[in-house]
Length: 94
Image 1 (tube, rainbow, N blue to C red):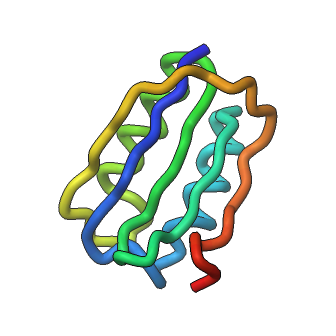
Image 2 (image 1 turned 180 degrees about the horizontal axis):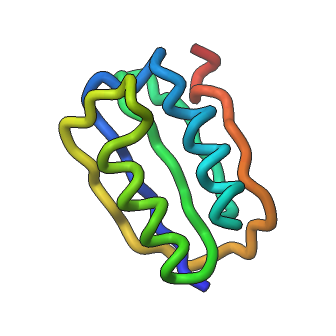
């Protein structure tokens, strides 16, 4: 099991990025979460089998058809043993 945290920048909010990410993660049996950040980026954590997580990281580089992804930063982290994928609220309640 591996874990990756990604931050996606570009035109990625208000384009169904989070919901599409959740559905894509569910389809690939990847756990984690996704949320909008106040600066206009989207942050996501993917946990699961290495190949499945890599597929989600690759997906994040394009996102849903309505998104315009400019950049994706990827950071390795220690897995926490997450079991589901969820959409989290924006930090600070925005």
